[in-house]
Length: 486
Image (tube, rainbow, N blue to C red; front, side, top):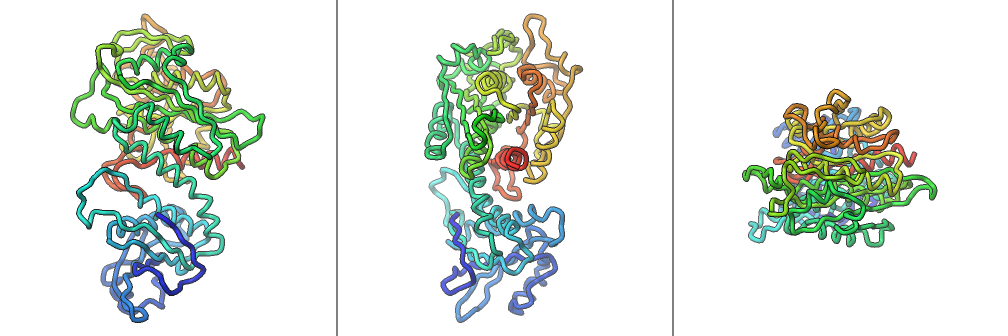
């Protein structure tokens, strides 16, 4: 959606016009029919409420909408304003209107508040599908927003957020694409095209190069697929030249059948989004590059497809990781941790990061624990956990701290290798985190975010339609803003 800013309301505005209003504070200069209609419809300006009416203004019929921003003094004001903007997109995206005039003068808004409204409006407007026979009422029509009455500084505040929106949209795009469109090689090519001209340094390792480095864990997952694996590194150097980067590492299983330990057929189509961690890393790096973040960040995506052909990895196989540690593969459907362990080893050897945050759609167990409300966070460093938790609260991408420790660690000991890739059925998300931790060098702050329940949803949310949410991009961006650029 394109935004155009105007200093004041003027002639030539679109027919569809919207106003953001605070709760129980309908503007007194609205037409009596609007006020009476809103009251009759029980519209009071609560968060996310909308009201629509047609009125005559200056001899023309105007389609007027009100969107509620809740109480001006609410602690979660920013989130409420995002929801107000998103509510307008949700209501009018397929309305037949091509543009909306959004008046931001009638609510108690700062420039940052106004930008939050625009953020919600833009995020909720994202769509991506392949349908060719949509009815007119199903087709996206709304393509432009004309912003009037915005507080001074709103356009600059929005410009600071626009890169983040681009990152979220890119992540949603990658996660939404089917596995015949996005696979390891095409994921790399899509990133190369999107990052062109951004200043991000791109490194790609192919199967031969990874084999030479001893990445037996990652390559073991990939060996059953005709799609060749890739390791993709995206490096943004916006900080001091001599400063080591923070690393974001993403699981990029572009399709997961489970391998020989094959998944049930029902719902397997959802496994196109098993690369949500890698998608979030790519989107976050795009956001950071577009807004020229003053920090050094390297994003690493381990990209594989997990398939069950005659060359596929078998339960009982023993593989040697890049770290030299050996792994007994008990279940080939516990593949994400095998990808992450080699990606984490590589980034430590290549870039010596000051901290590592990995993101992965790793376990169904985390959804049993937290449903779709939070991502699970496992962390070996209290300050890092606090910073990530604060970033999650600020962006609405919530994290819930989960335990790790020696009592769980012994559950993945193997009698024939250094470890096995699964424990018992109990504490599955925790033992997965314990596995990954064994590849983090001593003294390195590390957090593992299990985002299996948050990257894809079956019903619309505050700022997303059903499907890909783009979870992780805003979280990582805010973490960088608050802690690496301050």
